[in-house]
Length: 454
Image 1 (cartoon, helix red, strand yellow):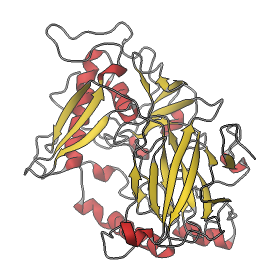
Image 2 (image 1 turned 180 degrees about the horizontal axis):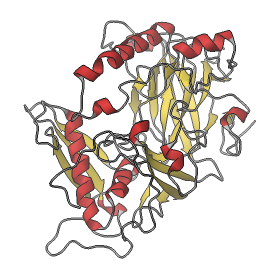
Image 3 (image 1 turned 90 degrees about the vertical axis):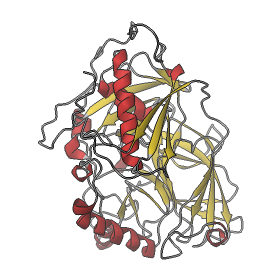
Image 4 (image 1 turned 120 degrees about the vertical axis):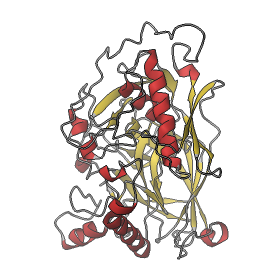
Protein backbone atom coordinates (compact mmCIF):
# COMPACT_ATOMS: atom_id res chain seq x y z
CA UNK A 1 0.00 0.00 0.00
CA UNK A 2 1.26 3.49 -0.82
CA UNK A 3 0.53 6.78 0.88
CA UNK A 4 -0.37 9.93 -0.97
CA UNK A 5 2.12 11.67 1.32
CA UNK A 6 5.04 9.64 -0.03
CA UNK A 7 5.77 6.70 2.27
CA UNK A 8 4.79 3.03 2.20
CA UNK A 9 2.09 2.51 4.83
CA UNK A 10 3.37 -0.27 7.09
CA UNK A 11 0.76 0.20 9.85
CA UNK A 12 -2.61 1.50 8.59
CA UNK A 13 -5.33 2.78 10.93
CA UNK A 14 -9.07 3.22 10.40
CA UNK A 15 -10.32 5.65 13.09
CA UNK A 16 -13.89 4.42 12.54
CA UNK A 17 -12.88 1.04 13.94
CA UNK A 18 -11.98 -0.02 17.46
CA UNK A 19 -8.35 -0.86 18.30
CA UNK A 20 -9.19 -4.58 18.28
CA UNK A 21 -10.62 -4.28 14.75
CA UNK A 22 -7.56 -2.73 13.07
CA UNK A 23 -5.96 -4.49 10.10
CA UNK A 24 -2.72 -5.02 12.06
CA UNK A 25 -2.92 -5.73 15.79
CA UNK A 26 -1.85 -3.01 18.23
CA UNK A 27 -0.17 -3.51 21.59
CA UNK A 28 0.05 -1.63 24.89
CA UNK A 29 2.92 -3.28 26.71
CA UNK A 30 6.71 -3.67 26.30
CA UNK A 31 8.01 -7.23 25.98
CA UNK A 32 10.58 -8.90 23.71
CA UNK A 33 8.15 -11.70 22.81
CA UNK A 34 5.61 -9.39 21.13
CA UNK A 35 6.08 -10.26 17.42
CA UNK A 36 6.66 -7.58 14.79
CA UNK A 37 3.72 -6.73 12.54
CA UNK A 38 5.84 -5.23 9.73
CA UNK A 39 9.39 -5.00 8.42
CA UNK A 40 11.26 -2.05 6.92
CA UNK A 41 14.71 -1.59 5.41
CA UNK A 42 17.17 1.13 6.25
CA UNK A 43 16.83 4.19 4.03
CA UNK A 44 13.21 3.40 3.20
CA UNK A 45 10.58 6.08 3.77
CA UNK A 46 7.62 4.47 5.51
CA UNK A 47 4.42 5.59 7.18
CA UNK A 48 3.06 4.51 10.56
CA UNK A 49 -0.49 5.47 11.55
CA UNK A 50 -1.80 5.32 15.09
CA UNK A 51 -4.91 5.76 17.21
CA UNK A 52 -4.92 8.22 20.10
CA UNK A 53 -3.51 6.78 23.31
CA UNK A 54 -6.97 5.81 24.60
CA UNK A 55 -7.98 4.08 21.37
CA UNK A 56 -11.07 6.25 21.08
CA UNK A 57 -12.10 5.71 24.69
CA UNK A 58 -12.02 9.46 25.29
CA UNK A 59 -14.44 10.99 22.83
CA UNK A 60 -15.28 14.26 21.06
CA UNK A 61 -18.37 14.74 23.24
CA UNK A 62 -18.51 17.78 25.53
CA UNK A 63 -18.52 15.71 28.71
CA UNK A 64 -15.84 14.59 31.14
CA UNK A 65 -17.53 11.34 32.13
CA UNK A 66 -15.28 9.42 29.72
CA UNK A 67 -12.22 10.92 31.42
CA UNK A 68 -13.46 10.23 34.95
CA UNK A 69 -14.07 6.57 34.21
CA UNK A 70 -11.23 6.03 31.71
CA UNK A 71 -9.68 2.58 31.83
CA UNK A 72 -6.03 3.41 32.46
CA UNK A 73 -5.05 -0.25 32.26
CA UNK A 74 -5.19 -0.04 28.45
CA UNK A 75 -2.85 2.90 27.81
CA UNK A 76 -1.03 3.40 25.57
CA UNK A 77 -2.14 1.79 22.30
CA UNK A 78 1.01 1.51 20.17
CA UNK A 79 1.55 0.78 16.47
CA UNK A 80 4.18 -1.85 15.79
CA UNK A 81 6.48 -3.51 16.60
CA UNK A 82 8.35 -2.86 13.36
CA UNK A 83 11.38 -5.01 12.55
CA UNK A 84 14.26 -3.03 11.01
CA UNK A 85 16.81 -4.65 8.69
CA UNK A 86 19.64 -3.21 6.60
CA UNK A 87 19.74 -3.20 2.80
CA UNK A 88 21.21 -6.72 2.83
CA UNK A 89 18.38 -8.01 4.99
CA UNK A 90 20.44 -8.23 8.20
CA UNK A 91 18.47 -7.12 11.27
CA UNK A 92 19.44 -4.49 13.80
CA UNK A 93 21.18 -6.35 16.63
CA UNK A 94 21.55 -5.82 20.38
CA UNK A 95 24.22 -3.18 20.96
CA UNK A 96 23.39 -1.24 17.79
CA UNK A 97 21.81 2.20 17.70
CA UNK A 98 18.65 2.71 15.66
CA UNK A 99 18.58 6.21 14.15
CA UNK A 100 14.93 7.13 13.49
CA UNK A 101 14.30 10.30 11.47
CA UNK A 102 10.87 11.95 11.55
CA UNK A 103 10.36 13.18 7.99
CA UNK A 104 6.71 14.15 8.31
CA UNK A 105 3.83 13.86 10.78
CA UNK A 106 0.35 15.14 11.56
CA UNK A 107 -3.24 14.24 12.40
CA UNK A 108 -4.95 11.58 10.33
CA UNK A 109 -6.92 13.19 7.47
CA UNK A 110 -10.55 13.63 8.44
CA UNK A 111 -9.79 13.36 12.16
CA UNK A 112 -8.44 16.86 12.84
CA UNK A 113 -9.32 17.28 16.50
CA UNK A 114 -7.90 16.38 19.88
CA UNK A 115 -8.47 16.61 23.62
CA UNK A 116 -6.69 17.67 26.78
CA UNK A 117 -7.86 16.31 30.12
CA UNK A 118 -7.28 16.01 33.84
CA UNK A 119 -7.77 12.51 35.23
CA UNK A 120 -9.83 12.09 38.39
CA UNK A 121 -7.58 11.94 41.43
CA UNK A 122 -8.76 8.42 42.20
CA UNK A 123 -7.80 7.38 38.65
CA UNK A 124 -4.26 8.64 38.14
CA UNK A 125 -4.55 12.33 38.85
CA UNK A 126 -1.77 14.51 37.50
CA UNK A 127 1.15 16.68 38.57
CA UNK A 128 -1.21 18.98 40.51
CA UNK A 129 -3.71 16.29 41.48
CA UNK A 130 -3.89 17.56 45.08
CA UNK A 131 -5.10 20.96 43.79
CA UNK A 132 -7.22 19.72 40.87
CA UNK A 133 -8.92 16.41 41.76
CA UNK A 134 -11.86 16.60 39.30
CA UNK A 135 -11.96 14.93 35.90
CA UNK A 136 -11.98 17.75 33.33
CA UNK A 137 -11.72 17.92 29.53
CA UNK A 138 -11.22 20.46 26.75
CA UNK A 139 -11.77 19.68 23.06
CA UNK A 140 -9.44 21.27 20.50
CA UNK A 141 -9.96 21.77 16.77
CA UNK A 142 -7.16 22.14 14.23
CA UNK A 143 -6.90 24.79 11.53
CA UNK A 144 -3.78 23.75 9.65
CA UNK A 145 -0.91 24.25 12.10
CA UNK A 146 -3.13 26.08 14.62
CA UNK A 147 -5.30 24.80 17.47
CA UNK A 148 -8.20 26.47 19.25
CA UNK A 149 -10.72 25.30 21.84
CA UNK A 150 -14.24 26.54 22.60
CA UNK A 151 -13.55 25.52 26.19
CA UNK A 152 -10.54 27.83 26.59
CA UNK A 153 -11.51 30.93 24.59
CA UNK A 154 -9.16 33.74 23.64
CA UNK A 155 -6.26 31.40 22.87
CA UNK A 156 -4.91 30.14 19.54
CA UNK A 157 -1.45 28.70 18.92
CA UNK A 158 0.61 26.67 16.44
CA UNK A 159 1.25 23.10 17.50
CA UNK A 160 4.66 21.49 17.76
CA UNK A 161 3.30 18.07 16.77
CA UNK A 162 5.18 14.99 17.99
CA UNK A 163 4.80 11.38 19.10
CA UNK A 164 4.75 10.98 22.88
CA UNK A 165 6.14 7.45 22.52
CA UNK A 166 8.93 6.18 20.30
CA UNK A 167 10.83 3.16 21.56
CA UNK A 168 12.46 -0.18 20.93
CA UNK A 169 11.60 -3.47 22.59
CA UNK A 170 13.50 -4.39 25.76
CA UNK A 171 15.46 -7.59 26.11
CA UNK A 172 14.33 -10.00 28.80
CA UNK A 173 17.30 -8.93 30.92
CA UNK A 174 16.30 -5.28 30.69
CA UNK A 175 12.62 -6.07 31.30
CA UNK A 176 13.57 -7.90 34.50
CA UNK A 177 15.59 -4.87 35.63
CA UNK A 178 12.56 -2.61 35.07
CA UNK A 179 10.16 -4.87 36.93
CA UNK A 180 12.50 -5.43 39.88
CA UNK A 181 13.30 -1.76 40.49
CA UNK A 182 9.71 -0.57 39.98
CA UNK A 183 8.35 -3.28 42.26
CA UNK A 184 10.80 -2.20 44.96
CA UNK A 185 9.62 1.39 44.55
CA UNK A 186 6.00 0.33 44.85
CA UNK A 187 6.77 -1.63 48.04
CA UNK A 188 8.91 0.99 49.80
CA UNK A 189 7.96 4.32 48.24
CA UNK A 190 5.10 5.13 50.60
CA UNK A 191 7.59 5.41 53.43
CA UNK A 192 10.42 7.10 51.56
CA UNK A 193 9.18 9.27 48.68
CA UNK A 194 6.71 12.14 48.79
CA UNK A 195 6.26 15.29 46.70
CA UNK A 196 4.76 18.04 48.85
CA UNK A 197 3.19 15.23 50.92
CA UNK A 198 0.93 14.18 48.03
CA UNK A 199 2.96 11.97 45.69
CA UNK A 200 1.81 8.94 47.67
CA UNK A 201 -1.75 9.56 46.49
CA UNK A 202 -0.76 8.74 42.90
CA UNK A 203 0.49 5.36 41.68
CA UNK A 204 4.18 5.14 42.52
CA UNK A 205 4.68 2.69 39.67
CA UNK A 206 2.47 0.85 37.21
CA UNK A 207 3.51 -2.78 37.55
CA UNK A 208 2.71 -5.54 35.03
CA UNK A 209 -0.97 -6.42 34.95
CA UNK A 210 -3.08 -8.72 32.80
CA UNK A 211 -6.00 -6.26 33.09
CA UNK A 212 -6.41 -4.37 29.84
CA UNK A 213 -3.31 -6.03 28.37
CA UNK A 214 -3.03 -6.12 24.56
CA UNK A 215 -0.09 -8.03 23.06
CA UNK A 216 -0.40 -7.63 19.31
CA UNK A 217 -0.26 -10.96 17.50
CA UNK A 218 -0.22 -12.98 20.73
CA UNK A 219 -3.76 -14.23 21.15
CA UNK A 220 -5.47 -13.49 24.45
CA UNK A 221 -6.31 -16.65 26.35
CA UNK A 222 -3.33 -18.63 25.11
CA UNK A 223 -0.68 -19.93 27.50
CA UNK A 224 1.87 -17.62 25.88
CA UNK A 225 -0.42 -14.62 26.41
CA UNK A 226 -0.85 -15.43 30.09
CA UNK A 227 2.91 -15.69 30.62
CA UNK A 228 3.83 -12.56 28.65
CA UNK A 229 1.00 -10.46 30.15
CA UNK A 230 2.29 -11.16 33.66
CA UNK A 231 5.79 -9.97 32.69
CA UNK A 232 5.19 -7.19 30.17
CA UNK A 233 5.98 -3.63 31.28
CA UNK A 234 3.38 -0.88 31.22
CA UNK A 235 4.03 1.94 28.76
CA UNK A 236 3.39 4.76 31.26
CA UNK A 237 7.00 5.93 31.99
CA UNK A 238 9.94 6.59 29.74
CA UNK A 239 12.83 4.17 30.26
CA UNK A 240 16.14 3.08 28.73
CA UNK A 241 14.40 2.10 25.49
CA UNK A 242 12.92 5.56 25.02
CA UNK A 243 9.19 5.00 25.27
CA UNK A 244 6.85 7.55 26.82
CA UNK A 245 9.29 10.45 27.15
CA UNK A 246 6.78 13.09 25.95
CA UNK A 247 9.50 15.30 24.46
CA UNK A 248 7.65 18.03 22.58
CA UNK A 249 10.67 18.95 20.44
CA UNK A 250 10.82 15.48 18.87
CA UNK A 251 8.97 16.81 15.86
CA UNK A 252 9.27 17.17 12.08
CA UNK A 253 12.93 16.86 11.01
CA UNK A 254 14.05 15.40 14.36
CA UNK A 255 16.14 12.28 14.69
CA UNK A 256 16.24 9.99 17.71
CA UNK A 257 19.01 7.48 18.40
CA UNK A 258 17.49 4.52 20.21
CA UNK A 259 19.40 1.64 21.85
CA UNK A 260 18.71 -1.77 20.34
CA UNK A 261 18.13 -4.63 22.78
CA UNK A 262 16.59 -7.36 20.54
CA UNK A 263 17.12 -8.58 16.99
CA UNK A 264 15.29 -6.28 14.57
CA UNK A 265 14.98 -3.53 17.24
CA UNK A 266 11.16 -3.93 17.21
CA UNK A 267 10.32 -0.25 16.96
CA UNK A 268 6.94 0.93 18.29
CA UNK A 269 5.31 4.35 18.42
CA UNK A 270 2.08 6.02 19.52
CA UNK A 271 0.54 8.64 21.81
CA UNK A 272 0.48 11.35 19.12
CA UNK A 273 0.29 14.95 20.34
CA UNK A 274 -0.74 17.98 18.28
CA UNK A 275 0.88 20.18 20.93
CA UNK A 276 2.26 19.90 24.45
CA UNK A 277 3.84 22.08 27.10
CA UNK A 278 7.02 20.99 28.85
CA UNK A 279 6.06 18.55 31.58
CA UNK A 280 2.58 17.69 30.23
CA UNK A 281 1.49 18.63 33.74
CA UNK A 282 -2.17 17.56 33.53
CA UNK A 283 -0.97 13.96 32.78
CA UNK A 284 -3.57 13.46 30.03
CA UNK A 285 -2.27 16.83 29.22
CA UNK A 286 -1.09 17.23 25.64
CA UNK A 287 -3.57 17.72 22.82
CA UNK A 288 -4.06 14.00 22.30
CA UNK A 289 -4.98 12.83 18.79
CA UNK A 290 -4.79 10.08 16.21
CA UNK A 291 -2.01 10.68 13.72
CA UNK A 292 0.74 9.48 11.43
CA UNK A 293 4.52 9.51 11.23
CA UNK A 294 6.63 9.20 8.10
CA UNK A 295 9.99 7.77 9.15
CA UNK A 296 13.37 6.64 7.88
CA UNK A 297 15.73 4.40 9.85
CA UNK A 298 19.45 3.76 9.84
CA UNK A 299 21.40 1.21 11.86
CA UNK A 300 24.62 2.29 13.58
CA UNK A 301 26.41 -0.97 14.21
CA UNK A 302 27.81 -1.32 17.75
CA UNK A 303 26.53 2.21 18.37
CA UNK A 304 25.65 1.71 22.04
CA UNK A 305 29.27 0.98 22.95
CA UNK A 306 30.55 3.77 20.70
CA UNK A 307 28.23 6.55 21.83
CA UNK A 308 26.31 5.71 25.01
CA UNK A 309 27.87 5.54 28.46
CA UNK A 310 25.94 3.30 30.87
CA UNK A 311 24.80 5.13 34.01
CA UNK A 312 24.22 2.12 36.20
CA UNK A 313 25.41 -1.38 37.06
CA UNK A 314 24.94 -2.95 33.61
CA UNK A 315 25.63 -2.11 29.98
CA UNK A 316 21.85 -1.76 29.54
CA UNK A 317 21.54 1.33 31.75
CA UNK A 318 21.66 3.82 28.88
CA UNK A 319 19.34 6.48 27.45
CA UNK A 320 18.54 7.64 23.92
CA UNK A 321 19.89 10.78 22.25
CA UNK A 322 17.85 12.97 19.92
CA UNK A 323 18.27 15.91 17.57
CA UNK A 324 15.77 18.77 17.52
CA UNK A 325 14.31 19.33 14.06
CA UNK A 326 14.44 22.66 12.21
CA UNK A 327 10.67 23.27 12.27
CA UNK A 328 9.01 24.70 15.38
CA UNK A 329 6.78 27.65 16.37
CA UNK A 330 8.63 30.96 16.66
CA UNK A 331 7.83 33.32 19.53
CA UNK A 332 9.71 36.47 20.48
CA UNK A 333 8.00 37.47 23.74
CA UNK A 334 7.55 35.30 26.81
CA UNK A 335 6.22 35.77 30.33
CA UNK A 336 8.29 33.65 32.71
CA UNK A 337 7.19 32.38 36.12
CA UNK A 338 9.70 31.26 38.73
CA UNK A 339 9.36 28.60 41.38
CA UNK A 340 11.61 27.52 44.24
CA UNK A 341 11.71 24.32 46.26
CA UNK A 342 9.43 25.59 49.03
CA UNK A 343 5.97 24.02 49.06
CA UNK A 344 2.53 25.53 49.65
CA UNK A 345 2.78 25.01 53.41
CA UNK A 346 6.00 27.03 53.48
CA UNK A 347 8.13 23.94 54.10
CA UNK A 348 11.68 23.96 52.74
CA UNK A 349 12.75 21.12 50.43
CA UNK A 350 16.37 20.52 49.53
CA UNK A 351 17.14 21.19 45.83
CA UNK A 352 13.91 19.47 44.77
CA UNK A 353 13.30 20.45 41.13
CA UNK A 354 9.84 18.81 41.12
CA UNK A 355 8.68 21.00 44.00
CA UNK A 356 10.16 24.07 42.31
CA UNK A 357 8.43 23.30 39.00
CA UNK A 358 5.17 22.62 40.78
CA UNK A 359 5.36 26.04 42.38
CA UNK A 360 6.21 27.72 39.04
CA UNK A 361 3.14 26.11 37.45
CA UNK A 362 0.91 27.09 40.37
CA UNK A 363 2.22 30.67 40.17
CA UNK A 364 1.35 30.79 36.46
CA UNK A 365 -2.12 29.33 37.03
CA UNK A 366 -2.99 31.81 39.74
CA UNK A 367 -1.68 34.73 37.66
CA UNK A 368 -3.56 33.87 34.46
CA UNK A 369 -6.79 33.19 36.37
CA UNK A 370 -6.88 36.95 37.07
CA UNK A 371 -7.65 37.54 33.39
CA UNK A 372 -11.01 35.76 33.43
CA UNK A 373 -10.05 32.11 33.15
CA UNK A 374 -10.93 29.40 35.63
CA UNK A 375 -7.89 27.76 37.17
CA UNK A 376 -8.84 24.47 35.51
CA UNK A 377 -8.77 26.18 32.13
CA UNK A 378 -5.28 27.52 32.79
CA UNK A 379 -4.04 24.16 34.10
CA UNK A 380 -5.18 22.47 30.90
CA UNK A 381 -3.71 25.26 28.77
CA UNK A 382 -0.27 25.07 30.42
CA UNK A 383 -0.24 21.34 29.81
CA UNK A 384 -0.79 21.60 26.06
CA UNK A 385 0.37 25.02 24.75
CA UNK A 386 4.01 25.37 23.57
CA UNK A 387 5.32 26.67 26.92
CA UNK A 388 8.94 26.09 27.95
CA UNK A 389 9.95 24.53 31.29
CA UNK A 390 13.47 24.82 32.65
CA UNK A 391 15.53 23.76 35.62
CA UNK A 392 17.16 27.15 35.99
CA UNK A 393 19.16 26.46 39.15
CA UNK A 394 20.06 23.12 40.70
CA UNK A 395 23.29 23.89 42.65
CA UNK A 396 22.50 26.72 45.07
CA UNK A 397 21.47 25.11 48.36
CA UNK A 398 18.81 24.76 49.55
CA UNK A 399 16.59 26.02 46.71
CA UNK A 400 16.25 24.54 43.27
CA UNK A 401 14.83 27.14 40.87
CA UNK A 402 12.50 26.14 38.03
CA UNK A 403 10.89 28.39 35.44
CA UNK A 404 7.88 28.18 33.16
CA UNK A 405 7.91 30.47 30.11
CA UNK A 406 4.59 31.19 28.37
CA UNK A 407 4.47 32.74 24.87
CA UNK A 408 2.52 35.99 25.13
CA UNK A 409 1.32 35.85 21.51
CA UNK A 410 -1.00 32.86 22.07
CA UNK A 411 -3.49 35.13 23.91
CA UNK A 412 -5.88 37.64 22.34
CA UNK A 413 -4.94 40.21 24.99
CA UNK A 414 -1.74 41.46 26.60
CA UNK A 415 -1.15 39.41 29.76
CA UNK A 416 1.86 41.35 31.05
CA UNK A 417 1.62 43.29 34.33
CA UNK A 418 0.91 46.98 33.76
CA UNK A 419 -0.19 50.13 35.54
CA UNK A 420 -3.92 50.20 36.17
CA UNK A 421 -6.48 47.44 36.68
CA UNK A 422 -6.06 43.92 35.35
CA UNK A 423 -7.96 43.76 32.03
CA UNK A 424 -10.51 41.09 31.26
CA UNK A 425 -10.86 40.46 27.54
CA UNK A 426 -14.39 40.37 26.06
CA UNK A 427 -13.99 36.71 25.04
CA UNK A 428 -12.75 35.62 28.43
CA UNK A 429 -15.99 35.08 30.29
CA UNK A 430 -15.45 32.59 33.09
CA UNK A 431 -16.88 29.16 32.32
CA UNK A 432 -18.64 30.27 29.15
CA UNK A 433 -18.90 27.86 27.49
CA UNK A 434 -18.89 25.50 30.43
CA UNK A 435 -15.70 23.48 30.73
CA UNK A 436 -16.68 19.78 30.77
CA UNK A 437 -16.00 18.67 34.34
CA UNK A 438 -17.12 16.03 36.82
CA UNK A 439 -17.37 16.20 40.58
CA UNK A 440 -14.67 14.67 42.76
CA UNK A 441 -16.24 11.92 44.83
CA UNK A 442 -13.14 10.63 46.63
CA UNK A 443 -11.87 11.50 50.07
CA UNK A 444 -8.18 12.17 49.54
CA UNK A 445 -7.03 15.47 51.07
CA UNK A 446 -7.07 18.57 48.83
CA UNK A 447 -4.34 21.20 48.98
CA UNK A 448 -5.48 24.80 49.28
CA UNK A 449 -3.09 27.69 48.94
CA UNK A 450 -4.21 30.14 51.67
CA UNK A 451 -2.80 33.11 49.75
CA UNK A 452 -4.10 32.25 46.26
CA UNK A 453 -6.59 34.45 44.44
CA UNK A 454 -10.19 33.19 44.27
